[in-house]
Image: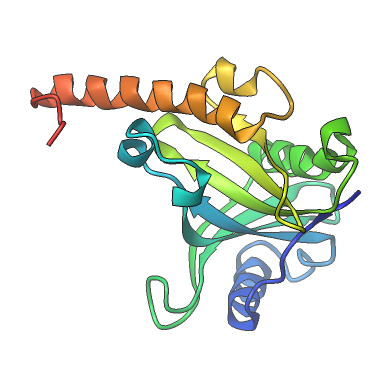
Length: 192
């Protein structure tokens, strides 16, 4: 079954379109575009046992395939999130953008996701540098995590994770990073 991608707010899409046309090329929007809501999960929350429901909306990301086959990716803050209007936060055209896009569209072919229709969001955990596709069945029953970009091999160990399995690895990494940060900062254990 296919993964469903949400539509962005009209103002958010207009900001993306205008920016890409101005900074990349006027024909840069001719290809397929995918829009994903971005949810961010913080290290402290994760290390303290948070599950995926603790991820907070933090904007959206667009991926557009260019006429030459390259991919443009951009993060846009939705209106009201950080400002009164939609704002571009980042824009990249790179192999990383293309590889991430390819992993997103290939998620439709994963056997674990074949039985139901899913909606997708982009899960970001910046403190351990991981981005994953968070897919939930449209009836709310089943959820999976599909790693897209991760600095830790353990988070790329399989093409799709059950949330608890993914979070067990991520929580351990989050705790390690926080401990390392406390040692650098010469802080107490942070249990306060």
